Length: 524
Image 1 (cartoon, rainbow, N blue to C red):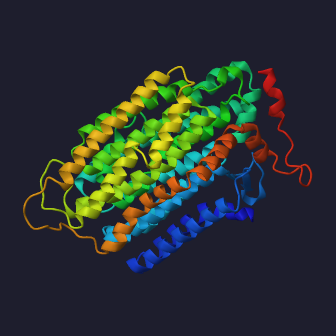
Image 2: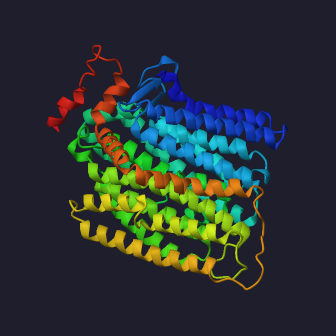
């Protein structure tokens, strides 16, 4: 495999965005062709990378042949490969729905912003240093703000103002954290930071810990964790359906950053004893609180899109619980649930878009029966089962693995109580919503508010995420094995460090020499 292929998921979207801006007067059809080709090539690329076994050991591509820690490096492993695949899949279904419903015609530069969003997401998942993570966070902020306001409207503007103010505060905190780390350690490459932290004098531990907590606050804002989640429900509920579907992975960027940055810098294998697992107790506690508040939000929601937004928040809480438990078994279950909830919330947002277009958004109001109500109701039932964590879909398997892993945690009782009670209450809330949407109807001929231009394509886009989850059920054994290997790789921080800083094999077929941190851990 050519290492240059690792850079394609980053550079293809940004080149496409530049091309789309240059050709913005060429017409919407040309823009659709360019954007569709870019998304298709991206999906083919990330599938090929996974199928070829790239990422079984971390692959490193140094930009301009400048080695780490002096140059910019892209690091591709199983976790980043998984996130790239989810991004490409969500980009594909969001693109299909946008062109099927003409959402992309409601404002200028939709496809350029869409590609810029993919650029920011893929860059965040591949970058090997903290400063470039900040840069890609800013790209995400700009692109997502433009996409959120696409189509206009006072409600979107209000939600957008809330969104951008909170995230600009997060960006400022991020800069403080980056400055503190660089001032103390003299580097921002993740692998090099881990080495420098392992060798840091005890007098610097306080500042390093402070920078760690600042980073955690930033990532918690991106993930919409309690109490920093208030921007999410309004933002996701007011934006268009294809944009909300793509935003389903936005909160996962914050969770990915927690796992990648804190997992690399403050783990048991490389960090000094005083700095090991600094945020795990906080992550577990905030995960429980996030799940509780999300459950209340799902119960109280008065429209479909806001209810789905709170379901996204519930998935964040569940995943933070898995990351806070911080064992290999919990991480395997968390990754399984990660895939499931990303696909299901994206599909549910698209379904909510269909419901809004043909029936109306308010759960408590009565309307004439929807066109294709049987199809819509069946999909609603399937998505509700999946997001409530009921069998036979993969949400049940993911939550079960997390709960089994929680038995070894001292807080297993509140974990079990919160996860199980929240699942029951979500079933109640979604059953009530489904009944109101599909059974409480006026006895009048069906009326279409704003029928999709391409009905078949729009329903196909809604159904694809559910179909992928069904395939996950069928292939659960190999997927679980692959995710187990992924969790092992994530916890093998010394190997990650060695691959980034010393990527040359010691001899043909001999693998790579052990990193010195393997030997110095005993000293801590």
